[in-house]
Image (cartoon, rainbow, N blue to C red; front, top):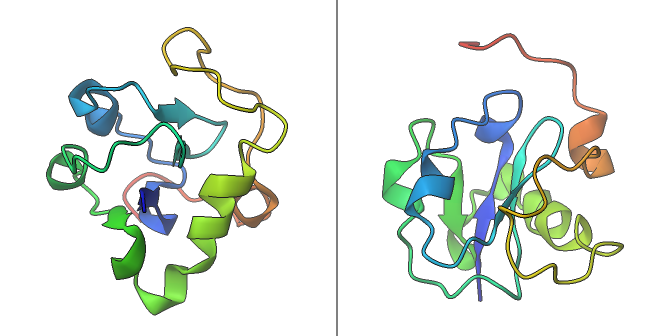
Length: 108
């Protein structure tokens, strides 16, 4: 089990969750943040600090955003397990589910 970052994070990327994560498993893509499913220790520290309520426990992702579990997992298909987001910096890609969304202006 893992936590998942869903649609409310797209084009927002507040990053409060990154500061709270004790294992550095939240990675930054171009338009969204992603939780590495194998590096996440299920502590839940990220969930309450997200100002847009985009983080959900895997079993609690709202139905309209269930595909974001797939996005969070598949984002790492070609990256493997880097062992920490800080050393990676922003990764110049997004999962296709996110990359194809219309651009959102902050606050919409």
